View 1: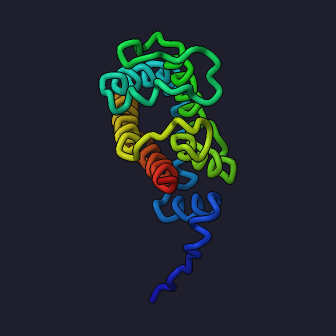
View 2: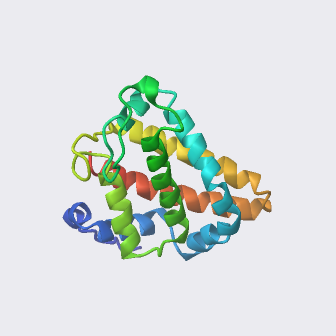
Length: 191
């Protein structure tokens, strides 16, 4: 008979590092997954601008997602667009946000998978709410889940286009999926 592992559920809610460690262990995100992700950095990094453009093109097609780019983003010093009609891929604030998504994707691949990543994933979830950054930013959970689903699909397609051997492709896709599910939890916890 196996022993049941005891989890401090109140600590899960209070401590992002403990939460990350629990999720990684429960989902099975481990050293093999980290190695799989890192094994494609050379192929993945040049694709990041295309991934970001595809993501923002999609978000700008819907008022429910695009409207969140009208309020001034934390750290943006330019003039935000006045209306949805003014938003496009060349808008200065959209370019600013695209740079953030590029850094985020690079961090997913190159970050140390430790306490610092746990805190990074946590703050990434929190900045899309009024709890951090701009008080005007309050992205509904449905839009955050839509974004994560879109990113998941884009990453899956991108990895498939690498032309990896089938088993290697499966390992890389599976590793990214586990990591995105952990990120999605760190988004959901702030709602």
